[in-house]
Amino acid sequence: RTPEDLMFLDELALMMRGMPRLRVVSVVARGTVEPPFLSGRMDMALMGIAAPDFAARRVYCCGPDGFMAAMREGLIAGGLDPEHYAQE
Image (cartoon, rainbow, N blue to C red):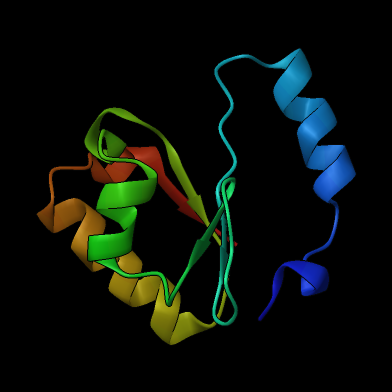
């Protein structure tokens, strides 16, 4: 819900340093945030801000079933190849 609630930030930062093409964007539901955090509930509008080129990427999604279904539908409708979408 807030930046303080996020796990593995140090590990993700280390991964990004070692993998220059990896981009991690953390979205929190509440609070005033500054980059690299975004605030709000992840939807296609926020996806357009976080990764405007999402249709040219591979997307890995995790979360509640309803969230993952909505993201998959929106991403594919936005041009993402279904073969480039994975979820946990």
